[in-house]
Image 1: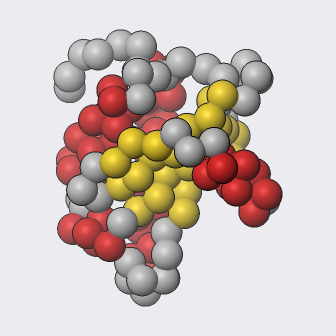
Image 2 (image 1 turned 120 degrees about the vertical axis):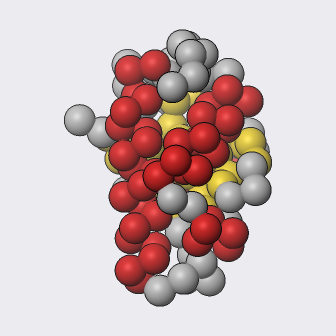
Amino acid sequence: MIKALKKTREFKKVYKNKKYYVSPFTVLYIMPNNREENRIGISISKKVGNSVVRHRLKRLYREVYRLRENELEKGFDLVIVARKKAVELDYKKTWKDLNILFKKSKILICNKEE
């Protein structure tokens, strides 16, 4: 089960850590959390699109994370922030985009491509 960051102060704490990785579609903020699990937060501004678009993106990000969760190092808080260009994402592009960020951040244990 995916553990989520829900409170504003949890998101702000991760942002304050200032460790982030950027791709054309997404920004991944990362911070160690001293736990045995990862927690994930997804932030999509109203500037990206209407509620239907934002919710679709959120589902895409959550699904890609869910499928890769066992291949990521544990003990991190992750915040995924969609950029305006993220409206172009479909499932395949989302998979590639997040995997690039996971590799950049060096939390991906298994580097196999699928």
